Picture (cartoon, rainbow, N blue to C red):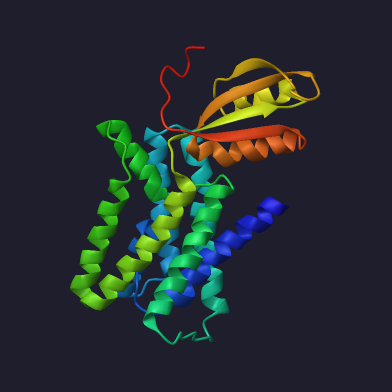
Length: 274
């Protein structure tokens, strides 16, 4: 229940940022939402419809080229974000919220939207289909980088500059930077991997979750408590940063009394050797 309530909160924050601050001021967001807001500026088509159509097409195309396990975490946000935007367009259609300074508007739009997207990642979902396109590009170019989505955003900013003015384009770029900074902090953290040390009374269930649900290797270490002198087994595993919250919450659901120590890992060599 807590997870679903947080999901609703994240979607509502994204929708409020988009409908209350970005769209009325002529700004654009990033990725698919940015494309949708740009189309809305050009021909007035409801941005929620634009988002769900673009997301649907991209999911169908990407599903042909990528494994479903990589796509599934993006499907719920891809469907629900435009629905929440559509609902909030009616909720706020009679309310014109004006902040005293443009700089405050930019900050509020960026922080509210960025927090909504980052909360999605913390819940184990993908924030935007555009990041799936990054993975797809990385798969075929062998060059995995966050630069691909920035290329799209810069193209959108130049188009916005051409159809409006430099102020709107600059303000939109600032909003995008704020949102994507917050997403990056939630999505990537500061390192490539996380190392988990786990002591649990439900060893077999936790091992099964790591090995068969998340698909990671693990090592079992023998240990003894320094004070209690009790012998324990420590489960050691190194996971991708994107699965950090999945493993953390998954262990807590299996054994809420489990001891968990998490450290940053900057590089993993021969990860499946032992």
